Length: 605
Image (cartoon, rainbow, N blue to C red; front, side):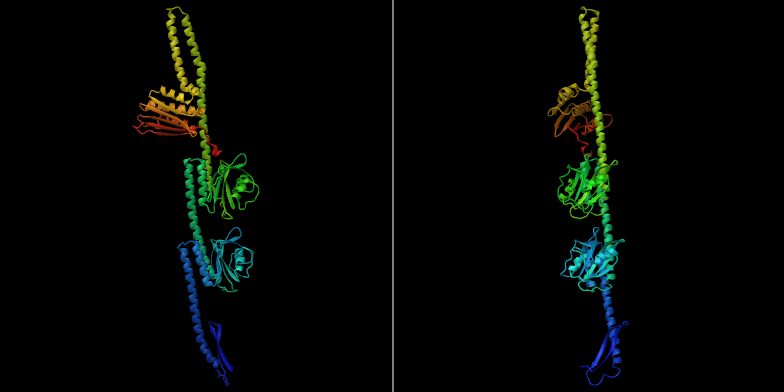
């Protein structure tokens, strides 16, 4: 057993590190002053310990700096943020002796999304899941204070960050905020199954990594912002080009519905609807990421708690993030398609709410905040297209009314001539002949009366020709075939006529076709130097097609008072299309299509 002992402290950099003790079991005591001689050795031991600790500290610092450099390199190389997140989680776990490290992004709905993590083998990090930020834990404290937090004894409701860590057996955790451009973005949580296992200085060291994470996020958001802006501008340009070309509104509606879903995040369904006077929504455009939308053309009554009704009632953007079973048809459409979140905005045309555009998600609980306001650029183009279409429809209707009025005036003049001047000339001619008949043979007035009767008949024939040119009676009496064949017989150039119609056509169409052919034949007679003309008219598929072709000199164009301008105006007034092919030396081909019935304004009412 020990009979005597002596010792001396080991002091390292002014702090008691340990002790050196010498003992003896001999009966005689240790020599006097043994402790002082031991003290001489403790100084050497202290120096060795200090050197070793310094080297270890330097090594730790070097390792930490190397870890920071590795992450910084990823940031500088613009690596995907997911790769930066994963690297940060692993580096923190390695250097802070944590059992689990998770990077969480705070969401607007009181949850946090696990965007990256690292853990020991028996722990699984729920990447991509949303956990509730509630109870007692680092995620709650950091969210409330925007400052680093150290917590022991985690407690929270099921589905919360705290409950998840508690289920893993976590005893202590450190939370460090991720602040991006002055705004709290998320938190880095480093946790251990041992109480007080994480050093006090861990918060400061983790903060160095969170700064790199914040830089990576800011850089990525800047790049994504630029990319998003470029994509959005490109999409707007594509739609604007369609609008400028004056394509049909339904084509623009379909294009906008798809472009919106392409450039704005989180969208699975897009719809465009027109409000009707009966307080309903008529869907005029739609797009879906997963299945074909069969509700274009469907009309649904306004009502219930949904975006279409809210926009109708307020004239302002709106959103709904939870569909209620309110019994309305509009809400039922959203539920049937599994829609979780919908946002929309009004389409205003000439100061009045014309309709609405909505976007929806079937995968995200909430669409991005403010997305209803990002629809503005597309909605303006839709409104412009609608206004243009309305203006074109109004103009076409006005031109059609002018043409119809002119045709009606022609008919009235023809009737007035027939019932007035023509009848009087006929009566005069008959009276002259009657007077001539009662004169004795060889009377001096007989020859003069005969001349008067002949001139009256000539005037009557000229008047009939004039009336026929103003409005042909044969068109009203016999229809298009006889009328066009009459035009062919009157032409100074031989004309071959083919007319294929199933019965009579609408009066406005027959009159239009007649005058189109008449103008084309007149033009050919004046300018073509042709030897033959072919006229083919066919009514099928709700359109009438006119083909007038000659073998003349060609070179016809819509200028110089050729009559083609007036012909084109008549065709366009009837909602038709006209094509002219007339190469010099190769004759002239005129192709016209006219609708048998026009619902031109239906899409933009």
